[in-house]
Length: 232
Image 1: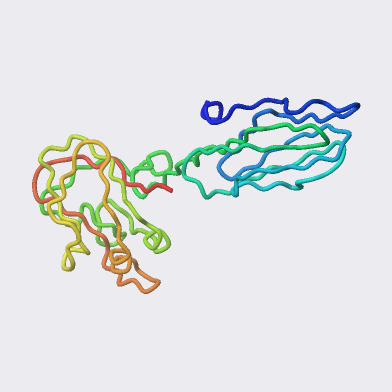
Image 2 (image 1 turned 180 degrees about the vertical axis):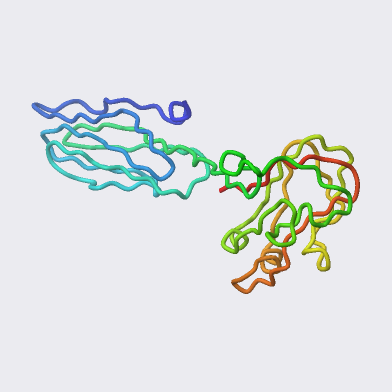
């Protein structure tokens, strides 16, 4: 495991003084992306907890005798990380590796969530059909309007595509307005379209948006659109 390669550690550390006792469990603590865990301290001496990790906090950092200490991690990291925690008491010290797991990627479907929307089935857009892939409840054939709160926090739209052959597209602001990307090549698999703040402002309905809809149009070639989603 990653933590084992980062540190050399163990329960020991220092010789037990006469009658001194300091035990800490577990020896390795695993936390979720923004979760918390518990250190159980069994002791008959005063003790103190320290770490160099700024992303970790404790319900208390010092005490005397037995204690259950809550360890909390913030959610600022996008990858797994680990840090060493030291508990010192009297002439004794114990060390625990705390590992915070990487955050789980959450997938939010705009189209293709067939579990909750069985009507959102795969489709093949026709060439020069500006309605097939227009994100509009009123002027689109398949994609629903993207909510404002999604637009203004959106970075990337992901298109799950299959059966793509010479697939050449335009990404634009509705049929009559600005072209954002021209001659985009979709391939079978996952394809990404970056959403800029300008695109969000021009396509969103409210919050200062102009409400002209994000629209993709197929120049030529063929493909099947299975789903559209974003991740966070």
